[in-house]
Length: 170
Image 1: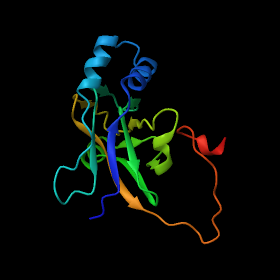
Image 2: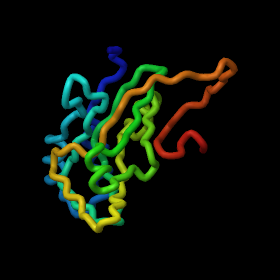
Image 3: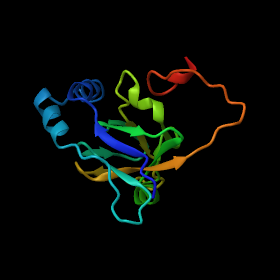
Image 4: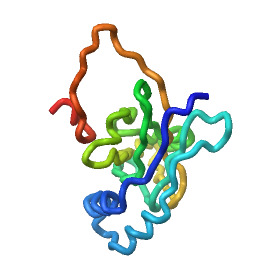
């Protein structure tokens, strides 16, 4: 196996700002405790392709609802590789859990963005059966798979990323 990436936490300040924006009900002390307990993604078994991302806090997601989770995680990836994010298979099967952008794409140059390459997971419980998704703090809820990619022979991309969603089109 090729070793092509390494996960890190974003800074505590970055995580705190993201949490205050998305979840203002949490106090600074709550956020500090959540930050301290963040787990870096890891594979569950030797044969697993996916790195499990763990919920930084418990949440409930009723059918038809969406939530945007600041994971507190960033990843340094070798050139020529991308991290693709998906819901964990069992959650997709049981709740039709979906990434709002279908597949999360984390490019290698995202790591150096002003937001430290902070990975967010915007997910929707699309259950047709009215099931509410309950995720406990520290439970795996999305997974990331590293994939090698190629470019065309006439590629001349020279743009520089600074940000996340839609930043390369600005």
